[in-house]
Image 1: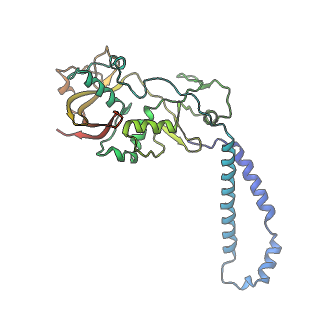
Image 2: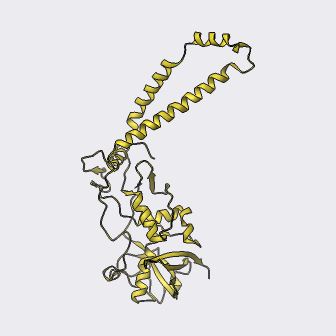
Image 3: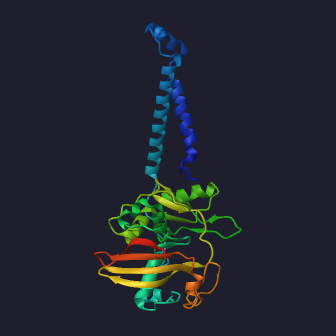
Length: 320
């Protein structure tokens, strides 16, 4: 799905190199004469072997030259940082105002329970829960963890509008900023770049979620695509409907440096609407066990960083 920003100039560069390459090649007659003079006509090596090797070397050289020209053009682009969206709906907070907006927990109504509810939500996407893992220090090898970080990273504040059934509209003007150029290219290719993220912001989110020592490795993870030269991600699909995943905590056990929580992931609309199953049946403390019999239960082990931040150390499914 990805194309270079300067895709329009590549054919011209290629034609130029092909022209220069053809002009520098010796004529067939001269080549044949040199071969005879060097005794090449008696060589056991096939006639086309040397020619093929030379052509391969020229192709490699041309490709290297083209990439150097592309890199040089990218170096001319403006990389001044654009403003990002300022909204606490990405990395969720545990202040009193934020907790007051949460739907009710069914079994634990303490402030601490709602704080851990919010913390658990920071490890969810619209598709649900991270797969289980034993050691957060190795989460770098999990693209799904990168997807969690992307989901909770504020995007760049760009000037566009999009509504269902209408064309994508970008309110420019486009500039020579590398992000503007990336968006322009995607629009011209007929794609809908719903959000764009700085890769360094994604790295910051990863460290907030999994600790400062995490080593982030960037890669594509649908619906997010990584653009190495721009050091940015684009999301290419919409987030979907109004319902969102919500953890119901069923057990809380303090540890010396954190907490172990057990939870089942259900669905919520807002704080005034009852929690729901996936097929929209209301959940209560009385019917919860029956209605979620086939739901997966997770055990979250949280620990505390030196600066007091709570991070997820491990995640396991509970089989009962």
